Amino acid sequence: MAGRKTEKANSLKITKRDEEKIKEETKATSRCIAFSLQDNSIGKCFYTGKETSQRVIFAKAY
Image 1 (cartoon, rainbow, N blue to C red):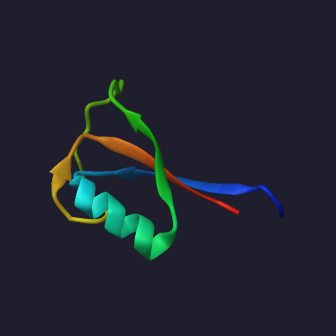
Image 2: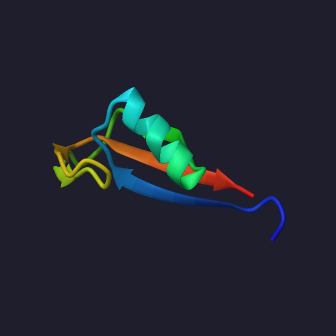
């Protein structure tokens, strides 16, 4: 499907360097960082395993 993007909302607690590593490894980039959430639930960062309430959407354009 030409032009289709895949998106995934994840818990995230990373540094700028980690974000660059994710981009190199997956070719996906962060598209949206949710600063204001209705539920302040704590989750684990999918990359570092650290606890965080931050949510980020990564997407890969095709």
